[in-house]
Length: 153
Image (cartoon, rainbow, N blue to C red):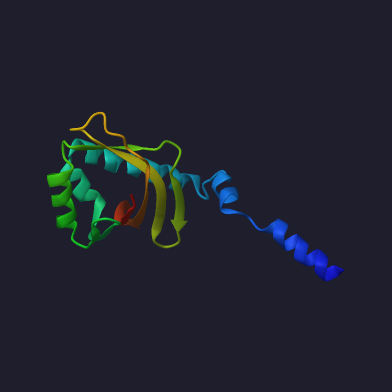
């Protein structure tokens, strides 16, 4: 009888993926969360305005940029050149409000996970669907830098 009770309770204690998605995110560290949300805005304001100097200042030299369709780039200059050539004046990024989650990483920085949309400025009626992104932020010399980007579409 005890074994039957134990087995039946296991089924009720398992959380489903839907349950996880419906769980409200609460930042572990509100100060780090607020900083990273502000850094996200700072970076993507520069991205949308094609401020290459500001973008350059926010990337670490040993940047790793993973793009599900474009592959891996480990060249900061290559990433910036690609943005300048393919994005500037052509694409606008908007954040899906409330989607950012931030997880502090001890003795390193933080991981940001969220959803955003990209709009093709040459096709104003084109639809944009949310895509997931992950950014790894490193805290170095009293400043925050992007060390890794994972862009999923």
